[in-house]
Image 1: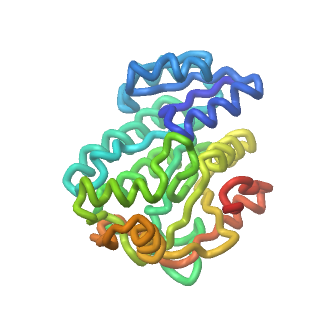
Image 2: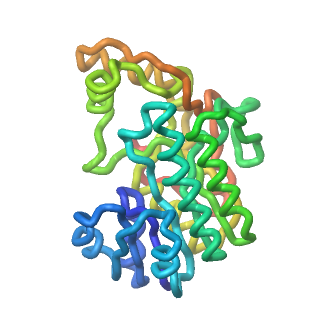
Length: 276
């Protein structure tokens, strides 16, 4: 099979590794010319482009059996609500619309922020999406709509990704928040801190693609209800000798449990995210 992975960050690279090891032909993309050699060690070919580059995506997707989007907005442009407007529109919505306009089988890596704080006692794929005007959920939803307009389109809604050696661990995230943001973060303190190991995120994308699943799917490790952001990060801050974070509540994620029962019913298992 031939696959295009748009956005070879930690999850995209892990997905490319899985597929290359399985004998598939993988093209990976990056916005950074300095990462070409790194990605070429995993992918059969590499394209340097932004996801909104229609001609570039068209060339990279030629002959592909599926296009998987694993792009992430730049961290430095995610903390301020005004910065998020252009960054999320270009990174998420424009990429998804470009890919979906060029290929009938696109799988988009989305976020559980599309549910906002969540409605009802349990959040699953049948629940309503948020009407929050913040650029984060608005653009994840707009990207989903572009992909799901095709009968074979699919979106995978995931929580916070962790576990890669290149990732900042949680103590480092708290230190960074204090150093750069004065301890003020755009998230909601009462939101549940669901997390997924990057390897499980890649495995779930592989599962959706190879099982030819369409529609929306939650990939949220749900064996136990996690602590809320405020409680989790208070413990981290205390261990680091730092003050508690303050939460601006600009980006809401569920405060009630999230279910991945639908994906589990298809046979998927989380192998790395529920063992810590």
